[in-house]
Amino acid sequence: MVYASVEHPPVLGGKVKSYDDKEALKVRGVHQTVPIDPFQQAPGFQPVGGIAVIADNTWAAFQGRKKLNISWDNGPNETFNSDEYKNELRATSHNPCKVVRNIGDADAVFVKGGKVYEGDYYVPLMAHASMEPLVALAEFKDGKATLWAPTQNPQAVQDIVSKELGISKEGVICHVTLLGGGFGRKSKPDYVAEAAVLSKKVGRPVKVVWTREDDIKFDYYNAVASMYMKAPLGANGKPTAWLQRSVFPPIPSIFDVNTVYGEPAHLQQGWTDIPYDLPNLRIENGPAKAHVRIAWLRSVANIYHAFAIQCFTDELAHAAGRDPVDYLLDLIGNPRTIDFKGGQYPNYGASMDVYPWETGRLRRVTEMVAEKSGWGKRNHGKGTGIGIAAHRSFLTYVATVVEVEVDDQGEVRIPRVDTVLDAGLVVNPEATSSPVRRRRGIRHKYCAKRRDYGDQGRHRPIEFSGLSGGSDCRGALSDECIHRRW
Amino acid sequence: MIQLKVNGVEQSFDGEPEMPLLWYLRDVLDLTGSKFGCGAGLCGACTVHVNGQATRSCLTTMRDAAGKEVTTIEGLDKDGLHPVQRVWMEINVPQCGYCQAGQIMQAASLLNSKKKPTDQEIDEAMAGNICRCGTYQRIRAAIKAAAGEMT
Ligand code: FES
Ligand code: FES
Image (cartoon, rainbow over the protein chains, first blue to last red):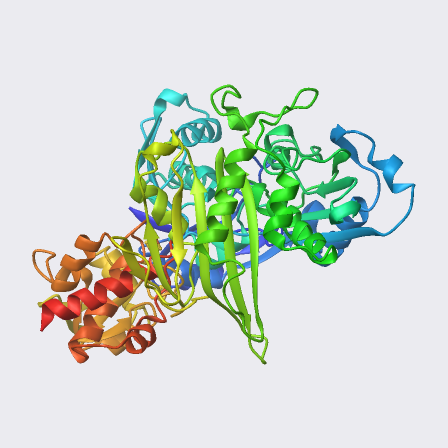
């Protein structure tokens, strides 16, 4: 087996104009350098291309790579600049976009004038940053490829490797190793295809190791997104109309660069299914061209959609002089099943009959988290604030109360988080609670507890409370948390 | 020729003296328990003991390791049942597991020097070991439990 490290084009879609590997080949342990072709648009799961350094060990490959002298053609994304892009997305969101769901006539309310509240929300590109940087081992022999890789998607490995090597899918065997963290990144097997291509070119088993820098630079990022919100407030401070526009480069752009609108599968993620009981509601989505690879990262589009809707709700509550929990419950309205007639709502591929969108369940987690967190009962000192958010993501209803402290230096600390979630029947409580607990890289005493809500039907909410005093967790699994790490 | 001891076994190395110990362990000795997370001393995944001290093997050159005794996760206990490993299993600390060898080596070294570390001492000793899965609460609980077992 030999080890490989690949110098990828500095800009996605770039290619090698020429290169000189004289110095690289002088590094002790380096065997050879191997060019990898740039991908054909669209990128899909193809390798990004570049120059691979093949060596006796990983470190020699890294060292050799530093000595490469490459001249690049940066390709069509050369002038991409994330600050300008942010402004572009925001400008798009300030103008009429494609209507993806409509109730009543929001414009008719807006033209009546009066005080209208507006909000802009922005979420940057996010990298998965799995603990294990990407790595894959490939052996191409006798016309067949055998791979060992931490992958969330061995079928996609089979597919892309058979295409890249021009062999049948049956000729590709993928052994799935422990994942080393994935969060969605390792469902995109470009790095596995890279190892396969190199093994074929080198004629030996090749292990490709990405550096942390490669991992962050060549991620399939969670989409950058800009959201614009608009609502006038009427009696009781409730919105009389509600407009929301989201603009983000869509995931299918990795398969077709001309795709610029969000598709129902991602617009449903906390956007077209805003659960508020409003007489006039217009939901729009605007176009955005991708300049980096965009794809799935845990909870995907729910991240930016929930952020915008829940922040705007909180701001409206303050504008209306109302308690944010009361206000949120008021907007959610009475328990009912949301009817998506006339709109597209894929419901995460699940049946609407078996998994209806029930606002009563969202109310219940909201009420429960308010109660468990001591909402309205705790004293918050100077520099401390508390906020609530409620959301349905992948058929799970969740509400969270976060307490935040900001000191004189602007340092932010989160002393306490309470979360209640209703995921329906929980088959593996440990696998449910661990990932929820992970969100708490914070300094506080924390306790997780699961109760049997057998008398309340099939939905058993699970609550996770971060308790600074840490006293009322009788019989609970109690964990203590240590400092925020980043 | 560089001489060193790894998990009690004498080794000699005639390769590049600037090579980090991590890659010697992983690629030359095939001791893949020590992990690569950053190569820059920022994550702690590569933590081993050098003369009993928790050390980032990604920043320790072979030249620096010469004459030293290195212990990796494979050598912490021959049956994998060091007190820290035992409580780690009892408390079910790991999620993906990738950072855990480093966490365990760091924790074991802390408990060697401090029998009953306070919360603050635990936080300080463990601050350089990142866990992307967020297992920090259980790590701290496990260190406390192990401290009980080791006395
Ligand atoms: S790999 Fe050594 S500290 Fe990250
Ligand atoms: S258990 Fe996954 S990084 Fe720590």
